[in-house]
Image (cartoon, one colour):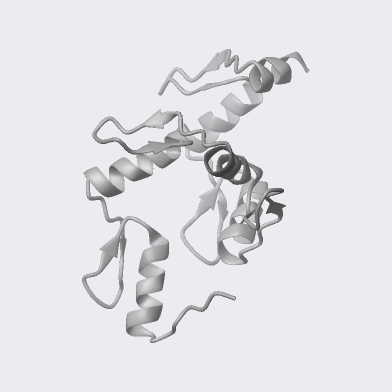
Length: 162
């Protein structure tokens, strides 16, 4: 309980990875980090894509959110729905509270999470395009853009919003 209070409520991260500097509040989270990031013990494979998870629960969350589009977390202030609690929290912080505490070091872009800054930097400033169309030279940083391109250009499937 003390670890939970210190970590979640006070942000104290007393367990540190000696390999990369990752810090967390609990030893179990550190062990999870070590196994998934450094020991390669990710043995739960998605049957729909190349995603591999350390924990079966993470694979289930991946399938539900990415492949089935299940979004169980609803914003209490608008119609936004999220697949994870963390995504809903990030939405609330950035959209409704206006919290954008992270700033890009190369431009004026601000974001609510470090992850969004990383995505912004890689896609905007570094020009990374990790996802490629299998039918032409189109590439994008975002897999969803390649899927939309494939549907619109090659399969002639138009997406509709209901």
